[in-house]
Image (cartoon, rainbow, N blue to C red; front, top):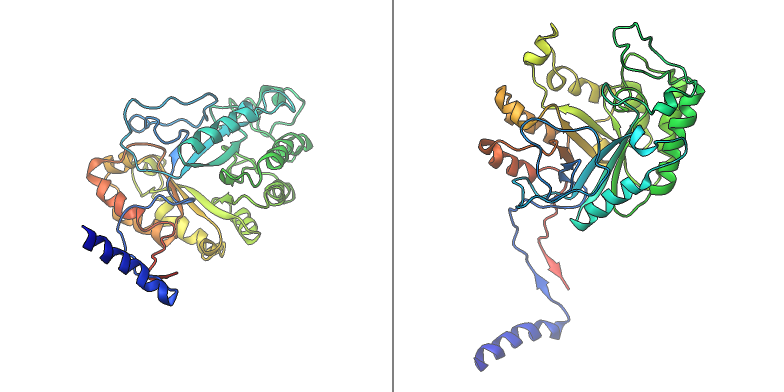
Length: 353
């Protein structure tokens, strides 16, 4: 034992004579859970049960989340992605429920995660705040229209810029640069704030709504949605990363039921990326992809998983939202390999001290 100690001491002390220690670390092949990358949890933090089957909710949580009795069968994650509707965060004019966001940040922090956030004006099932609809604000559609049961705002109305813009400005003033905030989605008009739809405002108005984010969030990374070309180009040229929300949409029954032989993956995303000149954005800003439906749906409809994953790598994705839904067991190994390739991965070959 004394001889072994002497040998070890000699090995440690000998390099000190030349004031140099050199190490050649061995590369590992593990899935790395690094900040700002990987598969996200959605509307929950690590340790909370995954969504059942192919279902998920767009309504963000407002109370503390309960942990599952046993660890969920879901990839480890450094990002918790949450979305809330306007009516949740501003139930009355000027009264902001920052406590909802603060609670989510605290719960994510407890699990070693940072929070990614989007605030959304409305969608088909979650209307604009009642107080806004009763404020005298202009409506873009009429009750007798085909979509008349959904109160869609006229975003060119100064009241929209005043109230939605006021929320965005207050949000930025409170949270820009927060150490446990991973990123913020740019959210302007239309369903989920994604910036597309039949009732788009003038470019002057849309640009002003974009600028609220670009000027308000100077330190926290921003992500702009992929759908509207002018919006995508404008925001990425001014420092935003980009995100798309129908990753994995291959041609199938959904679009054929609409009489269209079309898909996001094959007919839209590759062209849009080039048209916007956004091919190199990944070098300086995050790229985030969200599944169309869920991996279970892909499996059920025989989508080409290899192609879907390859495209994500081709687009240099940083993070992936699979809606906290289960990964089919037959696909888990491929998702594990995929996680080793997205985002960043530094390999230390030599260390000299």
